[in-house]
Image 1 (spheres, one colour):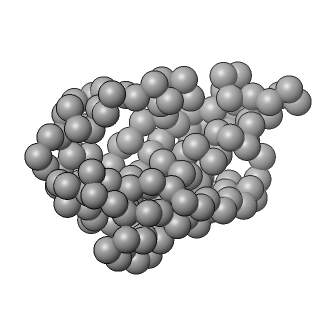
Image 2 (cartoon, helix red, strand yellow):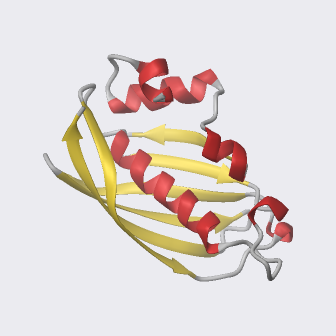
Length: 149
């Protein structure tokens, strides 16, 4: 089930994500990992989340998959804002660098994704994951395939 298509049918990518935010709904992954899409603009998508035990690895720190999920979401949704009503995208490549560990004491984090370029078939984006004090926790670059729905 595509929540974006249900909520924003017929709208361009930016308007779809704006409608999605306004609906207050969350996809399953956001419920599981406790994060939300909080802001979108032209070529911009911002997610916020609070890491905790639900995201811990066996060593008691936040699993790299949590970092990757927020960064992939920010990169992908930034590209989504550039799409027409008849386009979709999928991630082809995601490269992340983890700069600082996260624990439950890290508090709320923010993943800010921006489009670098968006062509007819391929888009490139980047994202930064920061804590509440603006410290860089991780960064990512992404290559995405743009396609017709």
